Length: 281
Image 1 (cartoon, rainbow, N blue to C red):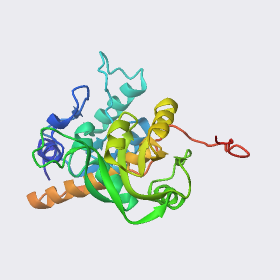
Image 2: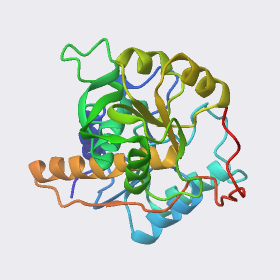
Image 3: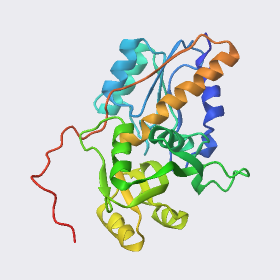
Image 4: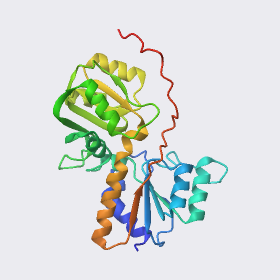
C-alpha cells in the first residue's frame, strides 16, 4: 500500500496546487504523510455526514472538492461543526485533502466532467488559463451537442444527467429555442457572463445564478440559462478524479480502493412548488 505522501503527490500531479486561485485553500488539511492508504473516498463537501461515511467505510483518505477552512481559522476545537469534522477524522486516522479551483482549472477537470455527464463535446475552456500554452486549461468549458435540440429537451437532458436535488434545475429562455452550442461551469458561474456572451453559445449551464446578473444577462443576449444546484454540478467530477487516481495507482502498482460518495450534501432539502408559474413579460 502507498504512503499518504505518495497518494498526495499523485493527486497533485493531476491537480497541481499552483493552479488554484490565490484566495483558495487546497491541499492536505489533516493526516500523517507516513500513514498507509488503502481506501480513498471522494466527496464534494467535508461536512459531518461525509466524515461519518468515510469513517464507517474504513477510508484512510477523504478527498473533497470544497475546502474545510476556506478563510482560515485560529482554532480546530470541537466546539464548532468544522472542528468536530477535524476531530472525528483524526481520531479515526482519516486524512483530508482538498482539490478545489485547481480541479476547476485542470484538463480534464470539474467542467469537463459536467459536460461529459450532460453528453456534450468539449471544444475548449470558457475562461482560458493564460499560463497554459496548449490553451486547454481554464475555468468552464465551451461545448456543443451532437445534434441541435429545443431548450425544453435540453433542460430535461440536464435534469436527468445530474444527481437529483430538491431544487432541481431552473430554466430561463423560450422552450422552443434551439440549443446546439453550450457553455458549462461547475459551481457558481454568474461571474462569467461576459465570457459566455463572447463565446456565442445558445445556453449556459451552471449554478448559484443571482437575480440581477441573470436578469441582465437575459437582456444582453438571447442565451438560455440553466441553473442547477451547486453540489450537483460539481458531483460528476468525483468519478473523474477517482478514475484518474485509480489509473495512477495501477501505474505505480498500488493496492488502492476508491469510492465516490453519493450522499446529497446540497443544503436545500425540500421544494414547495407554487400552483402555477408567474406570468412572464
